[in-house]
Amino acid sequence: MEESGKISLELCFGTTCFVMGASKLQEIESYIPPQYKNKVEVKANTCLDLCKNATYMKAPFVKVDGEIISEATVEKVIKAIERKIDG
Ligand code: FES
Image (tube, rainbow, N blue to C red; front, side, top):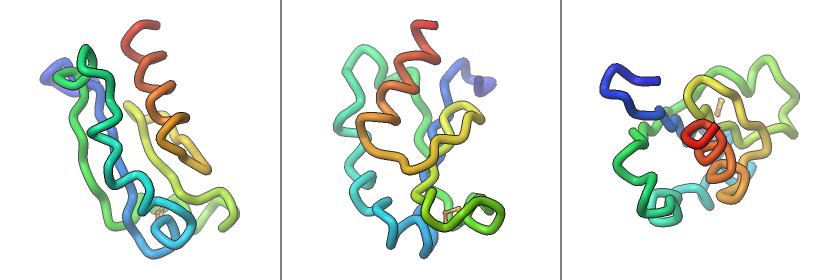
């Protein structure tokens, strides 16, 4: 949890993640349910350094409050946000 009390959502737009589908996550903010919007802090990264350790096929990566989501899709990320906020 951020100091602001918000959940951090770290997107990766590095080459590996972008090629593997992160481009689809660019609009993710518009999919965040309105009741969660002001509870989420969205940051974009150039590389989360996860593509180097994990297998290439697991990209794109997103971190939700430090939790790594591999093969991230809008649906997976929204679910993770809901889990973090609602427990
Ligand atoms: S490009 Fe996304 S983790 Fe490296």
